[in-house]
Image (cartoon, rainbow, N blue to C red; front, side, top):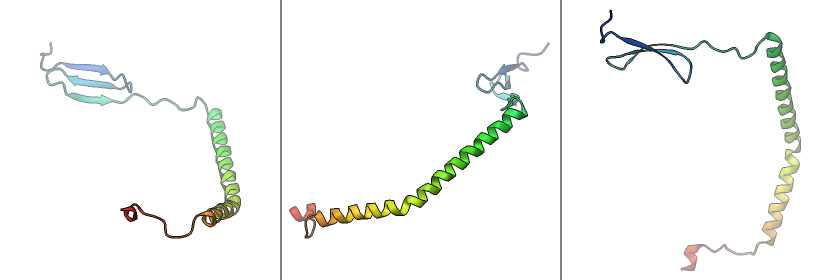
Length: 102
């Protein structure tokens, strides 16, 4: 029979499902066996379908970025015109600073 010093407990990790071997005397983990990895997809057909959907999503995002680049110049022109209008409406002269008010 094993002595109480040599006793090792096997514990299932509640987080990852792996097996831990813990020394009873010191409380130190002696070894860790990782849980087997779960399959992401059940079969090759669902994996291929997911890949096609991912590719379609990438293409959609790319098309949106191309459209945004085409309209970028118009947006910048509108922003510049608005900033120019605000600058013309602003009072002329030096802006007051808090330091100047003292």
